[in-house]
Image (cartoon, rainbow, N blue to C red):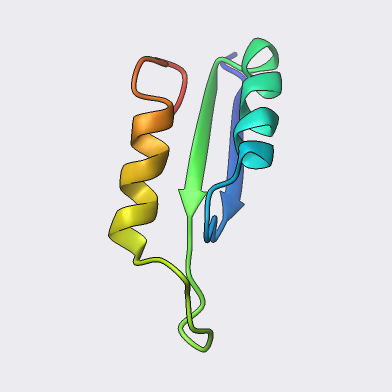
Length: 66
């Protein structure tokens, strides 16, 4: 059975601490899904599209990360 982790958050911004958590989890799971969310009642610092772009750039060579 495939081991899948889901890492949810607003990631506003995505920090080196978030990256560290994902990288330390990589040996433990077959796939890690980074679930980017937002709170419509809260003013964000960065647009959702920019946060998605940053996360994709950080993990662009990692097949386990979605």
